[in-house]
Amino acid sequence: MAVAPAGATTPAAHGHDQVKIKRAGLWLFFCSEAVLFGLLGTSRYFLEGIEADELNQLLGLGITTVLVTSSVTAFIAETALEHNRRGIFLAGISATILLGLIFAGGVVYEWSIAHFAKEEIFGTLFFAMTGLHASHVISGLLLLSFVLVKGARGGYDGSNMWPVAAVIMWWHFVDIVWVFYYPTLYLVQGVD
Amino acid sequence: MEIFRTGLWVALILGVMTVAEYFAAASIEDGTVRFLVLAVGTVAEAALIAWYYMHFYRLWRVEEVH
Image: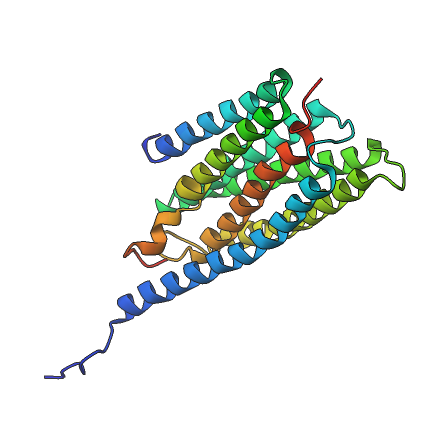
């Protein structure tokens, strides 16, 4: 009878370790990204305090609601895949992409109507913060689209879903950044 | 459905908090108090997303293979 050497791991245990390592690595990446976003957000308070120019408050509330809702549909997609509910998974990912596109469109519209004088520091901060965040939204949309296409071809199921979980975690991280940026840019100066 | 219940409750709380933040910003006159209220609300929202949607607790949990 063959005897496994001491310290040897089964394939299943190896899989556990792999996912744990990948998850820890992704969270470390989130930490490094949080420093980037945090420094930019902090510079807004350092340079301008809580003062700001007037932005379109209803648009800000609207796109924030859309992005938070997209996190809910992403959660539904991930949970559905965990339980091998493929139809709900694909619908959830599709809805998340659609809501992400609406959010990105809202940001672009805000850019088109937000007018700042060249010397206005808040204008620089506004475009830098929303621009950096929008680039992450776009990367998230590309990743979600990839997951949607591969998922539609049956590439994932409840026992093989780490790529989906990682992309959806990325999307939630992008949402968390906006949860901080929304009050920082729109609300902290007060709403008339 | 049962498997989505907790997440949908969290979604409802996030929605209420987002709208509450807006009205807090509109109604609180003092800038410092407004900043602090918004900061607390924002951190709470982020914590809810990280815990329930990003499954932060799984970092320390022995789990299924994905």
